[in-house]
Length: 308
Image 1 (cartoon, rainbow, N blue to C red):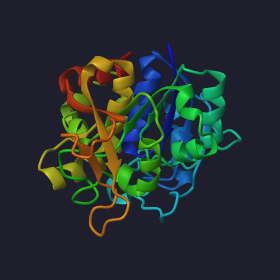
Image 2: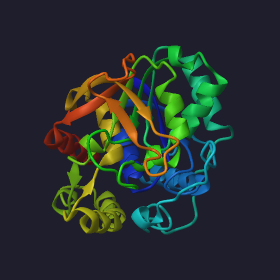
Image 3: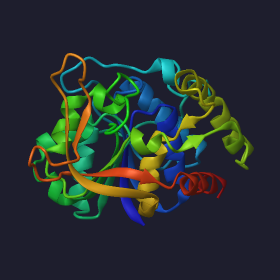
């Protein structure tokens, strides 16, 4: 089983990613680190603890990280994820599971040193925690097996601005640090592929655990309504779960190596991920960009894991 750390800002699709990672029983989850993003750091941490309780996995450590982007103001996405980040699906404020002591960037460094060459980071949030870890530990790239991050869009339109995907928009400076850190295997899972992995109400009905089915149906209602409003399709994209899916079954996606950067100083395009498809800039490739996905196979993997 591959050793992983999940890094999340637990909103609706992060929660589904956590459920997939846990229920697959194919990943050694060393810990889950949290960061400010869709919701505040405290809300993301509480939500993560709630989801682990729902998944009957309370022993997985949760470690809180950055409470704000590196240099910018926080930008929460309550319109998409609801005020609590989970679409109101787990309204009980009491959380029996608590986060561990520590700071997420330090935890990432510690685990990478403990398991050199064996650790995969799956990042489904703004990349603030990893950027801080890289600034503190410049040798970190040589210690990691792979970084898989959900973020950016390289051929299509954004989902927070006309050009930017939310995670790269929320902390573009952090994304730029990660892209330029020299990570040997850095996989980008962007909107270009995640928008093809659509979860609809009929698919949710295939979940066999009544409590899990009820949670997924309730939590995704606001998500599906928002996606229908913006895209005219009554479904929601499994953005963050696909990043976990790539770790579980790399053959689900087709990847190509390109030089990728992020805009950090634009009046209109901050957070835009720029992929040099034709090597116009003459730079060495730094990112494996997911260009294709077997959406049907991924949806089967997702449903089967949650039903296991």
